[in-house]
Image 1: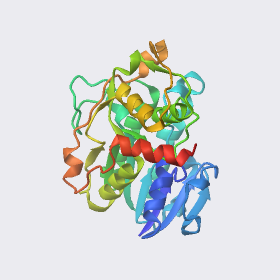
Image 2: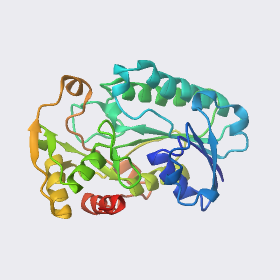
Image 3: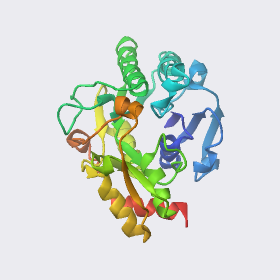
Image 4: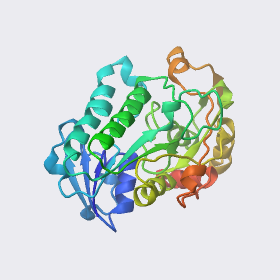
Length: 304
């Protein structure tokens, strides 16, 4: 197949490019080349620099599969540039759909568990209500709807895959606004003090990057048209248990403190989350890397 990955040098997009490039002709569309180091075999991947809001129909001609990863990645843009989420996630998705509508490639939209907000019932599944708490997930949910509308008006094969907290090698460890687990893994590795919201007494679903990529590949290859999937580990873990695991694996004892989340985080942050992944398991996919092994691999990727 000829595959186009938007946001293809990002954390998830780059890992997916590595997964697909040995079997398929992969082109990535990227805002900048700063993530090129994520490509393990750069000669196998064509890199086009540009923004998804300006993508053209010519760039989608002859493409069999488009994986739309281009996106903002956190809730904080509303404090500095609220239109960035709208430009990237909404206008960018419309531009991509306009570019695709004549050629009708298969489209896989990569979405996020943040669209659920703080659900009234756990675990959530594909049919749980969505009440996004921030502008980032609200625009991702809008983009999901745009994809559904276009796939009905200009019939093409569409799938949506919502991912839980993805972590692992390749994610930046110096940004507390995104990739929080990677950020704390590095702090623990360095023996630095760590303040946890509410002492880490909350649970989340963490999905190792290789499992996330396999989930996307499975949906792209096997899913019936029109279906939405939620991909996660299916095993919620207390954040304070992750910190204990980090202490054990690093042999260092970062001082752990407890703090109340700041008002902004209380307004837009998710408290507890767990995922029912029965539907995507029905495609033959299941996560393989538990959090202890995943943290071990991540520590090794950062060196000492």
